[in-house]
Amino acid sequence: MTIRKVTVLGTGVLGSQIAFHTAFSGFDVTAYDINDEALTAARGRFAKLVSTYRAEVDGAGDGKAEKSADAIVLTTDLAAAVEDADLVIEAVPEVLTIKQETYRKLGELAPERTIFATNSSTLLPSDLKDSTGRPDRFLALHFANDVWRFNTAEVMGSEDTDPKVFRAVAEFAAAIGMVPIELHREKAGYVLNSLLVPLLNAAMTLSAGGYAEPEAVDKTWRIATGSPYGPFQMLDIIGLNTPYNIMVNRDEDGKKLAAWLKDNYIDKGKLGIASGEGFYKYS
Ligand code: NAD
Image (cartoon, rainbow, N blue to C red; front, top):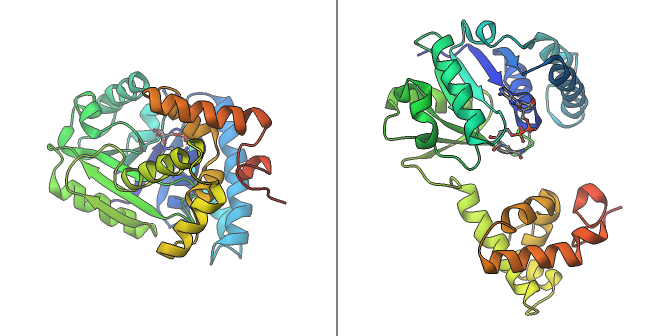
């Protein structure tokens, strides 16, 4: 099972990073999106990634970053995008019906040998496998935002995933410089969010409930565990809109935390590092 030709579906925040990083790692990459407008946005994203890699990634000088961007074949033709793909990595919007429809088309268009991997953060491979027409060649390969820095790739199959497919995808992840994190069974939130979400929620519960200030919570976590960041510093990096959007749809306790974030931070324009202020001020 050789993976040489990789097609990425969706060139948004994560898809553009996955496509660029895979090209940068020496693989043949095709990137598909739905219309010319999306492809123009993709070109803009690749141009930004060129600057970022030149500034932050070893070996990105001497034109390597530019060459990587130029080498990516961009197309709005799904059949052409997947006709010779060894691996398709899907990074389309996190909407079940869009993903199912994408896999239905993909299952018909891609060669039998092609492996499909979803980058979904919240859906399980089981939610999508029946739409693929090839559950044995389908699994999740979950990247973290800013793939060049936060280089974990969580690999998670369904009960139907062929172990050889799982192995080939884990090896591919390692070949593009990711650290493969292998899950033996399906788990919502994979490893990272299974750990991170409860930590962040506990931190917010402490401060929203008036038990301790965010600075005190962070200091405790940093000093007592040796971690470089406290949970509120992590929330500032993630951006406060993301936890708000998740919690506003949760149970009563979740809604209370969402309201606390909104009233004290979001409505005051304090959205995290990206807005210059969140729980902390940034210059
Ligand atoms: P995004 O909204 O930035 O990008 C989605 C892209 O898909 C857009 O370019 C859009 O034009 C395109 N698209 C829309 N409909 C499509 C279709 N039918 N077929 C193909 N492309 C289509 O989204 P994103 O943040 O890059 O997220 C994509 C996936 O990656 C989601 O499953 C998400 O859970 C996952 N993910 C996101 C992050 C993150 O931090 N943003 C991190 C890990 C995983």
